[in-house]
Image 1 (tube, rainbow, N blue to C red):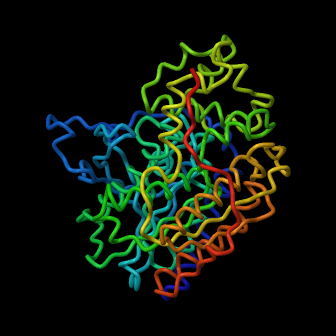
Image 2 (image 1 turned 30 degrees about the horizontal axis):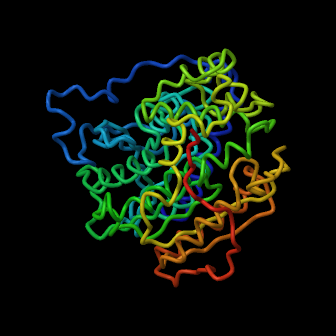
Length: 442
């Protein structure tokens, strides 16, 4: 069967499965199904994880690729591999690799590492668990994302989908996302089952939560994973979280995005082993207990008028007086982990009012959750260090910007594989916000 015919058939099948997943009788009860423990995720060997090099494969299995529990024609290889958390402690994490659905693939040396925006504080919401057969509401996100990377798959590219937040779902802990992404690529390149050729090249792509992983991986790769860095040809990101302290100012009180600040506080606090409850008010304790294992699908629009001052004890209403907060937030500012040596395509919305988030009097406009001025400054900083950047802004919100960004990002990634000249517009990127570390107050 010709490759283009297989591609059309695959797209029709995936679309049909996705529709069926949310429309079949009984789908609601299926999505609410409980989780069955999966021993694949547990590392139980007697050899300490620290004895293995990052990216070492610990377990391998082949599964049927599922969308909200419904089978597709695709097969996927899942790898349990050695990685590190944000504090550089060894952990076992999972990635999913999907090889193209074709008998004669002409692009066996082309790999796209797709970083998901599954955004959750619950490890059960990771893409690998969803693809393996998850039937819960959060599993809709990886299901929908299948259509986003399908254009690469039908061209014969291999797709890597890491669980970027790690085994504890440390939401918003940017460097950890980067480590898991890089070690996922390491594992895939080593896998004998996948058999990727020695001349394989890898592009990264991700939006929103996926952009956290794709950007941090790009900036960490030259020093943390030079072996992976030499395989990378570019990273396309959109809706970018650059300076989380600025974003807290921007989204607190937002009718749609306000609760995400609470998620980020819990996720970053968890990653650095902070005892958050000791700093929280009665309202904050109740919020922490309710939110600590929730997905973004349970949070969006559910926490309007949520402000920092309402969830902490009175002595911490000025968050700059909370030293552990200052120390942690400064460690997750993009650009502090290194400088990419690969080209970047960066897209960012500025129409946050469409999603109910007003422009910040300090930090300016954003897309409703991410700040455009922060993204501009990050791009300008990288440009000044010689990174090839194509930066675009859209007068749209976070959700609507993605519809414009995605086809541009796909085209940009394809052009990197075709060795086309890298477009860059560094000279026209306007100044943005300072990205200085937060300074603690006595």
